[in-house]
Image (cartoon, rainbow, N blue to C red; front, side, top):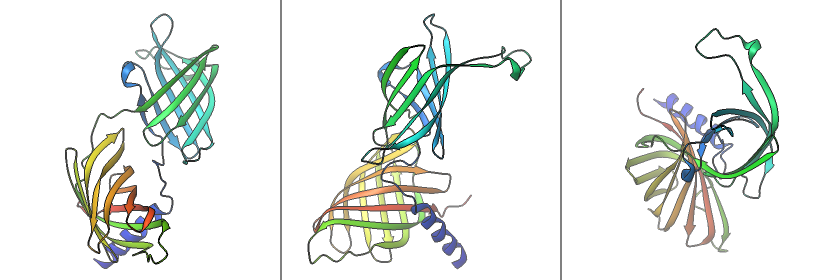
Length: 263
């Protein structure tokens, strides 16, 4: 129906308005694969990240640490960094009656969490004067199937182009058809101003997806591409599409879509 199509486009434009080059939110479980057995749970709301460590004390027993870290800025690639105080928490036994008055949060140091791209971060935390630094990545325990038909919108940015280059579009909307089986990923974007097929290999990092491969457009351009920061809610997705282009040094397309599938 026309009104449904209109609402889908408006909703996608709203998503696209803040589309970043990297994953927009650091919410995930993070770990170091070579040190399986400890990790971090990070939940971001706005400019604040609540960070929980599941680690062990000097006695080998589980240690509960948590911190509320505030985003203090971004690096040159727009990767955010967070910092804040860190606490050790103790409280009543889970099997008995729980009295919040018996919970104790003791300041032990600070935590700094700096992302390096969509899948990697450096964490530095201090507990009672002992400083620990690790490189962590998102933990993947469930791979998403992106197959489906979406109503999508696109915003393109071309750089370093030939003098006679005329962009096929700056903004466009249309259908996005994705076929995804295992690590095989194929995406057909059928816009009003351009139509292209993207075929590549899918990898997933925590809740963030990524695809690398080749593309071919109906109006001629072809080359390689990287679809990064692919993240989703139940019915929507957003990502950045970076491509080679025969007439430009770089081309990037922010993509957002809303599923047209049934409930």
